[in-house]
Length: 135
Image 1 (cartoon, helix red, strand yellow):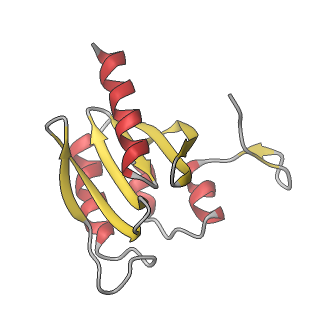
Image 2 (image 1 turned 90 degrees about the vertical axis):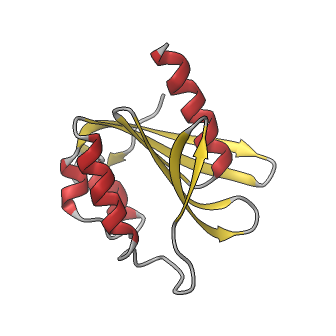
């Protein structure tokens, strides 16, 4: 376990603060649909290190709609690309490929959890863990 602390303000980093640190312009309504506790993980895979975030939501349908709207305005999105939908274990997830080596933006709302990762492989690992835990 590790935590990220804002040493200048002597407080733990929030999801909003984390998005700001990575310069990800995210509508505040999305953070309003997520609980304040979250898990940040680093994954090692053959293509390199990948990052993942898991946060609980109390409004999965509302969060899904907000994320869908955000896809069209995300500032890091290449102009010629768009988020695509695929399925893992019968559940839909969205992805935007940024590089051919399994690097991009991948997200899934799985029951009451948002899984946001930088690779398909790490999304699968987290989804598998959440599905196992829920059984």
